[in-house]
Every structure is written in structure tokens, then in C-alpha cells.
Image (cartoon, rainbow, N blue to C red; front, top):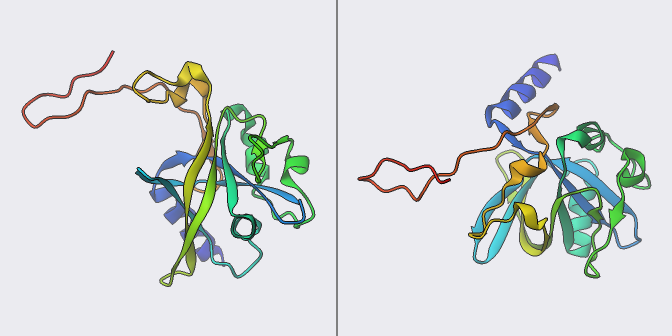
Length: 201
């Protein structure tokens, strides 16, 4: 068993630092759920699609079940100051225990949306369920979602559409349990074969 845990920690760390996203869902009975994920990835901008990887559905996966049941989920990015609360959502709460209540977050329903956002989040958007792709090699599931409503503070949105996420100090994670902060980055002009990359001011 210890060897399995060692392997899981090692392999989970290999892909590096990722954004810690809180995913908010609700079931058809109105029970809310919140869970931390680091497996969100970009699939395309037009149409705007994102993917999520879920572990094998051999035990209750409330986020996956609710997303498929209602067709909606929210993605919420929070400041690293919330890292303890964020990590707490990874505990195995029962379906009747809302992580919003247990982990110190406030559910917020925006634009008459189905799924709850996290009020404390500074950047948030909703996804509508597109389809599930089962991965037979390891029993995991990739879910494709379409980006719907997006809520971002204007001070981090640049004229060309770039989001200065470092300005909100987003919570990052390595592996399953190590949380980080991000420093401001350097942007470069579009790369061309015959020119040295130029840093943007």
C-alpha cells in the first residue's frame, strides 16, 4: 500500500505546478458540492471548450454526478490566502454535507445559473456539460465543458484579452497537497523564426 501511495505522489508531481480550481455543482435536490481540482485544461477558444479529468467512478464522485445530472458546473479561482479552505474541500464529505458550509465558502448563484459559484472567488466562469469520454487505459473520465458566463475583475483584463492572473495571487498546487503562490510573469511578442523574442512592456 505504501508503495502505491509513493507512486501516486510521484506521478502526480511530474506534471508540475497547476491552478487549484474549486468546482461548484448542485444536484437536482438542491444539495451543493464544492471540490478542488487541478486537472482543468484548455481545449479550444472557438468554440470555447475546457476539459476535466475525473478519477474512476468506482466510488461516489459528487462533482461528476452533479455535473452530468444538471448539465452545469462552475470554475472558481481564489487567492492563495484561502489554501487551507481549498484543501479542506478534498476531504471525503458525505453527499448531504456541503463543502461550502464545512470549508468556509459562500455559494453564489449568478445570472440565474444552475450551479453555485464561490462568492469569495475573484475569477469564475461556468461550464455546460458537452460530453464524457471514458479512458479505458486507467478507468478515468474526461469531461468536456463549454464555457458560458465569465466573471472577472476589470483591473486584471488587458486590452488584448490577456488576463493578469498573478494580480489576484491565485492558488497553485503541485501533486495532491502542496500549495504555492505565483509571481508576476513576463509576456513576449508573437515569436518569429528570424527574430529574437521581444519582451512586452
